[in-house]
Length: 413
Image (cartoon, rainbow, N blue to C red; front, side):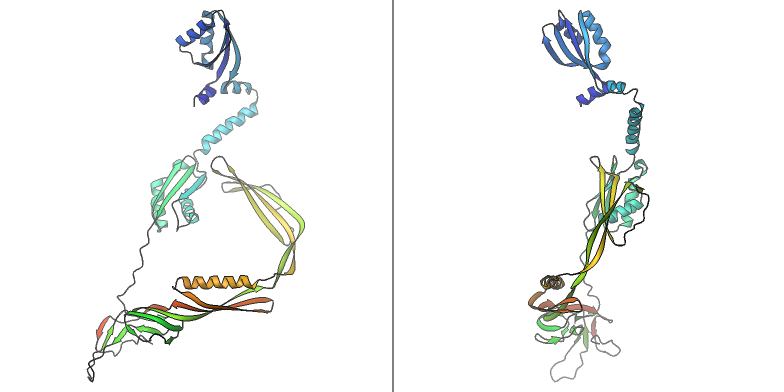
């Protein structure tokens, strides 16, 4: 810090020669002259560096000490500016640079988001942009409290948000809401229905009347456990006890069979580059784009566009960048794709694993077959699996005991 202070206010390197140069040094200390870096080239000469604004006072002290004083070097910002006094272009550029720094420091150059996981940064930045927090916005004109309140209304997934403006950077900190676990509604009548056909291997009925047993084959859409329980009276009795309507619940596992297919072309168009290419440059400043080319038309029929962006950074990202677009011409040609059946098999296996992942299932047996026809390679996966098949399906009615079933909707269809 002291080094920069001495540079800004300027400093001089002095050489004092006399019979008693130490007396000159003592006088400088008594008069509280700021000096440092004292050197003794010989017994009658000393060198020291002092603050530029005390030069006149130091010369008077040298005369009192009967020493000859010589200015060896002038350093710092004031001498540098003095040397540039006739270079008007440089001075103008320096003045404009200082003004630009002073003006740009009042505007936001970058917006950063922290603390988000489920909500994407792009979504948060889009809302912030609509509320005025964006690159190029006038920072003193942003009311953080109002922006945060409106952002919470736009983003119900967030429980807390804060906007901190630090210089040219706006930091958006968020906290996401903790989602409540879904609680199954058991206040309505429901059946347990098979969503996949299969052979039942395990069944645990918590409530309701089982319509199938272990080892039975059930088709997709059939009721496995009914929410209407037929109440039976004593043996050899003709007493009608009616029905009990409940919210059926059960855990049902079955052996199922699944078939998946995947296709890949045996031929495709390959790009053959002609060697012709064109580059176009543009400057991006905030939302403004300045093109350095006249004709925006493209004479190539088929081409690849490669876009490269070179951002300007000064410790932090700035809203200034150069963009180069390279256009490469090519011609299309039909070539064999060397389609690999093993790769398609792997993809089908991964797809099946994703299907079974949420169904607490596992693969018991798997086989593949392939055909090549009409320019396509088709791979078929056939698998035997064990998975959970029962889902809850509600129906109209009321829970509880009923003696009269007339007019009640048949939940089994």
